[in-house]
Image (cartoon, rainbow, N blue to C red; front, side, top):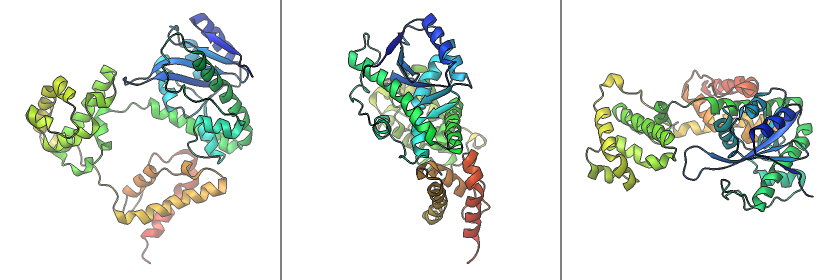
Length: 377
């Protein structure tokens, strides 16, 4: 069946279509972009589906994105996307806005227990019985003109995404639909939450093995790398490879030869930024103790594994009761934060990352489980 494709190539056409879309109960949204050698994604195409047609917006020809921003923020229009974290980045970069309310069909599939983290093609095959063509996901979406196969691929995505919503939404109970929208809102909140470059060192692998003085150096290296990647618009590893930072903080080289011996140190980094990095290490390495960051907590000991398993079982039991993919229930990182708040003897505190319906349904059960585990047998 031929798809009805409409191109949007100027500001006035975009404004008119956005006005019409805001009268609909939902629109399906997808993006094609390039991110091979840049920090930020570069939009190549924006696709909109209304359930009948595919609309292809050429971002290389649009200057005024305000109408699309207003559509994204319209509370009366559901925005339907699939596995949308990167799409959200593209939309935020273009329009300065993010979709709300947001219905992610990958999440919906999990809440219907069709599978967790299902790829788009597999979900379309599973729900609609349609086999999508492969091969265009990695093509050049910034080239002009786009090939016929690229156009067909992009249009199919928009049309079938709308069909997915129309098929999945009636299968969701009111509770589950609310949870899908709640998780969608959480995705938006996470993207809006600006990461402080000077807090990134806490997530660095093996950071807990460093002294506070060494952590001061790691903190500066992580922050500098992040800021430079954003300013230069290049991938982080193009500025400084991730695996080079920990040994730099630990050994604190004071000359270019020693810097070059660091594992995974790229020669290009030494040429471009070697002298600066040596100066950064020297300056940070001489900070007084009052300016050192707090120590990073050690990973949970092996003895905590049994308790972690008990906590995970609470989520699995709820998943079975609700017929939801168990992976959607309690994330490992959340459970680890809960355990770290009081292991081994308590008291324990629910982490901020356990919120919404999960906190309401499972928060007290988790605390009760930990209290029981702490009682002498």
